[in-house]
Length: 245
Ligand SMILES: Nc1ncnc2c1ncn2[C@@H]1O[C@H](COP(=O)(O)OP(=O)(O)O)[C@@H](O)[C@H]1O
Ligand SMILES: [Mg+2]
Image (cartoon, rainbow, N blue to C red; front, top):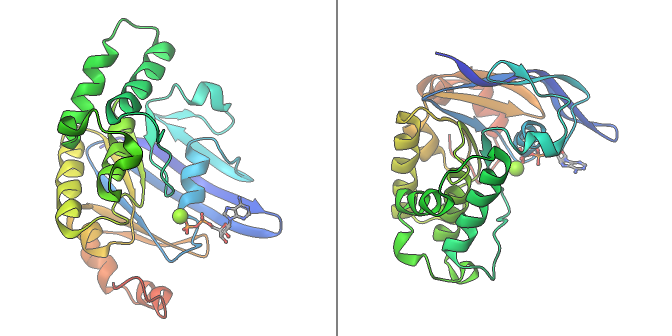
């Protein structure tokens, strides 16, 4: 297995607060890597480091073995890494199709190839089951579909690494199952997926490995069954009403 994305001893400090503390983890091709932890553990901050929105105080980020830690956001946007946001970042007035097409066209303008953005957009919509709603205005979508649209937009950029920040938030059980199947299929196609998610059932079902963060530090990285049994994980979650491990 090969690490497509790797964090080595990454630390982020906001003011005096260490939000991420010497975190090492890697995402392999073909795997869904769960990243869990109580609110404020540093999960979204780690994604911000990967996508260049936040510069780490220390440590290294590697994509396909290349050090991208100091890469500017303009260059970094061309990397084959895509993410979704905890707070949805869709173009509300645009249709579902145009949201995805925009993402595909931005990718094509970086890649300067002659790929067909429309075909990429349609493929991403088919993949996420949104093709039938292509002409809907995206701000009219219910939350579950809007989250899928974020994933579709990410896919339209042809990523190798996909970072998903709470994609199941606001989804009902059936939508969550659909999302789970989609992610398993994408991993089978060889994507490296990092999944930040509070839905423990989903995490335990679809992730092959899980990293637990607490107060910015890695508590452990292990198979889902071992995470479930771990005493330190249970203690970290104690008193957190929204998570049942
Ligand atoms: N832009 C910011 N400025 C200052 N502190 C921040 C900022 N973003 C996050 N933090 C702090 O960093 C810590 C980790 O936050 P975050 O990465 O959002 O956690 P999570 O996604 O695991 O809930 C928290 O203590 C949070 O308050
Ligand atoms: Mg977060």
